[in-house]
Amino acid sequence: MNDSRELILNTSLKLFLQKSFKEVTMKEIVTETGMSKGAFYHYFSSKEQVFEEVIRFFYGDIMSVDYNSFSQNSLREFYHDYLNHVGKQMKVAKYVLGANDGNAFNSNHYLLIFDALKILPDFKAHLLERQKEELRSWVEIIKTAKKKGEIKSAMADATIARLFIFSGDGMGINYIIADTLDKTKKELQVLWDGLYTTLKP
Image 1 (cartoon, rainbow, N blue to C red):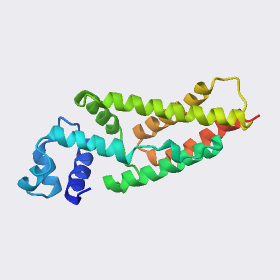
Image 2 (cartoon, rainbow, N blue to C red):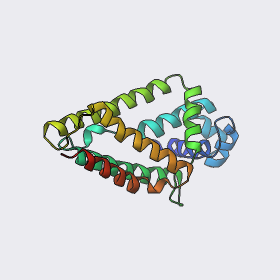
Image 3 (cartoon, rainbow, N blue to C red):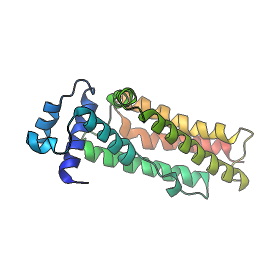
């Protein structure tokens, strides 16, 4: 990605997380980047265009998850790979956002999502597809774990999958609200290790 373009996206992302889409102005974005107005408008002609690119950059690149890169041999290995991925994502997000206090996000993260849902017609479909992919990936590794005798449960595979997914989602929301998101990986491992233990034969 072009350095100037990346600077615009990083700067805009920080502003959109500090305020809402409505509150951030093009003038403010241009000023914060330190670029001339002419140079800035060479890349983006409107705030809507900037916002759409920011969402694609943040949720399509930085926060994307390749579940196929996680272990397919064991449920325990799978969720530990997932946790390691979360840790790496947080480091990248902190770098991009310039967060030095250990918390790259706050509750405005959800305002950003809601703004995207209102402004970008395809964003909801994108999120729903990612949720389906996440559920499919968890269900597959849970099926494998049952077949190998790694875990044993009368619960449906999808139900177990949702226990892992929803507990992770809920913990993330809790820590974002409390501004302690840096604790998520450690606490989530404790939670998932406990859930895994209850599933072992």
